[in-house]
Image (cartoon, rainbow, N blue to C red):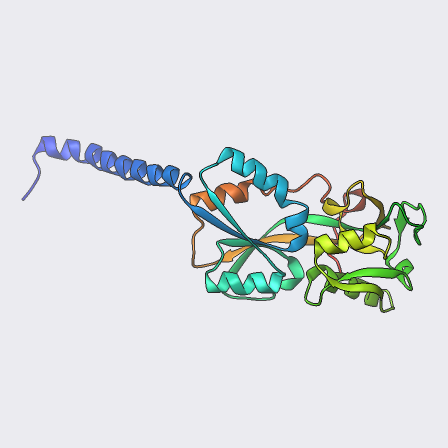
Length: 252
């Protein structure tokens, strides 16, 4: 069966109309997703304390119908949950992923790491603006639990400088560690995004110390429109760069 001349002339128009209709249906589904879906995000404790509260508050204001589910954990734990399908995507630290063929990663930003001390107790670092990693030798450190990304980063940096760190107390999560420092138990190495006015904050001397945060997701699963909308908000915070704008991964 062949088309008439009129049919031949209308065929391209009909095909465009069908394509436009399919595109419209797809767009409607995407818009509807922004009103009745759940986004499952994994993040390290330091990011949950520093970066995410502001980002998630803005996201919730813009998309109040989306349910947010946050799983807090170390990068290795988050990697496993991603592989199991328990998360849509995760924010992880560069040195924790390794080469997992199931996961794709995208660098998002670099966070400067700083030293914090209590404002109310005498500080072993005085009132300096810069210190070196070597100057942490013998200083009491508030140290995170085993398997915690910042613990491994701090210990690796100290060993690279030729010494093993001294722990005043260890085993806590981010919120506990901040309170221990505020109480005067010792110093801690933390991202600048959690070092607020409650602490005396000292940067590391150039080239500084920092860590790269990556977006991780499964290669075989496409992010939903809602999840992509959240990813779009995860832009570098103003204080994420290292001293003088230089970016140096910790322990490298």
